[in-house]
Amino acid sequence: MQREINKYLFDIQTALDNIEAYVGQPKLFETFKGNLMLQQAVERNLEIIGEAVNSLLQIDPEIKITSARRMVDTRNKIIHGYDEIQPEQIWNIIINHLHILKNEVETLLNN
Image 1: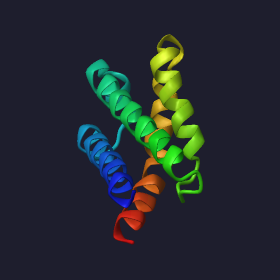
Image 2: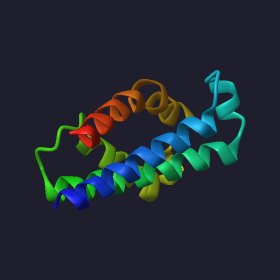
Image 3: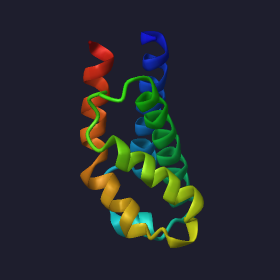
Image 4: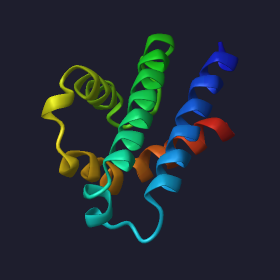
């Protein structure tokens, strides 16, 4: 089971690294908002994160990932409510939440 958990954690880590690389430095909302391809690339990686977190929750509902259920809900909203997603919502996730997830995933992978 641990092997399967590590696979999903690695998938999340890879998606986080992708988002970080796509957004670049400095992180500027104007750049993000003005680039549809960048927005869609980030959204795709958020979908991957949400799917991997959902799989982790099925294996271990007590996994130490903050807001795990909200990540799954975000994935569902991106996929099923794609026409309701605003760049500001995705930017909020990038700026305020992904660094927390990155730290948690690294901790879980190192234990």
